[in-house]
Length: 431
Image 1: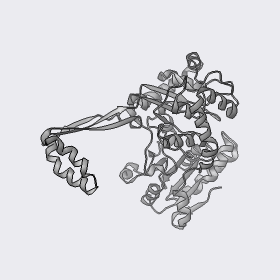
Image 2: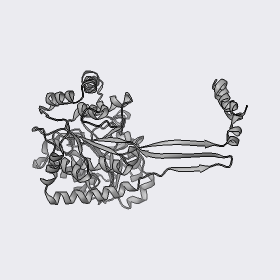
Image 3: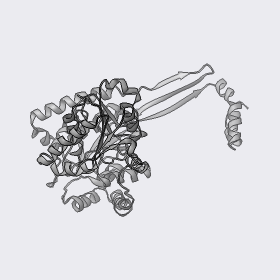
Image 4: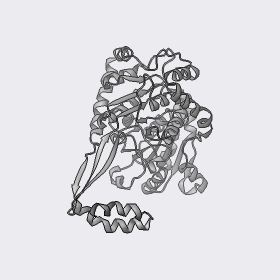
């Protein structure tokens, strides 16, 4: 089912395939499908959103946005114990993200130059929450809470509707708890475009965050390239890389790999281990689960074909592999995992020790589950409060401070061919 390979036996081509793995090329659907949808929504607003939702989802919307009654009904119809669990998660997520707030600063040099940075929230944000095969109320928490902490005044949710045109109950319930009153009942490129441009009923967003299908990703990429919106990242298949030594419990490791596999058919699960016996035991547990037909059997069976088990000679060698791989999630199930913390780079979210499975971070511990995929962790970070903020630098100079700068600005601007007015814009103030 899963091949066991020594890292040293992987060819350069095999390593490159693992390291350079980001998603599909969506150039074709961008040109043929996404751009025409986006442009029609820009020109026709709600009417185009309703039309495309009927065309792609088979849902006849009466209004693009959910009503207040619809959102409240979703909350009141949700089991109280479910609400209680989500409220506890909200408390954890809010606590963790409060530590991410940035303070503006200001200071003055001896020459009289005052410098500083203002950290200010974006005015409006939209959070895409996937729907279709399943709804993900946890994604409401992960997108909305950091935006609220940042101070965004207007926050919307974008999510596909159910076949009867209503919102998914749990998504509506979470929106109600968090005080979100705008839910755009349309997914795909049309939902993204509605939030990006704004319509008669949909407020315009300055930033759109959250993962979605390839049409969502392509629409976000296109609208960002046009300067219409800011985005968080381009989402690819979800992934986990587990580093485990001979002390790890193979049953636990197998379940952590399978919990990733049950996300979607394209999910990627990788085990890098120092123990060949552990690798074989993990495969045995995975095969038993797949053959049992339990849970999301068809999805797990397809996704596990993307899995890899790689043998290494040391935990340090495994970490070096992970640093090059740049996983979305990384579990480090070894003795004394904190010893290796400073060696680990390029991870979207890190799970240390045998009692920190990815699922606890997906839902409850407080860290964010909207993370870079496809190796993007090598140069980007997960969703956080800073995602919803802009920073503005400022300077105030006294006459003496500017006078001190004239000579240096003149030389530097002359080198770049701009001394006619760049240098003169300083000198004229002292003539």
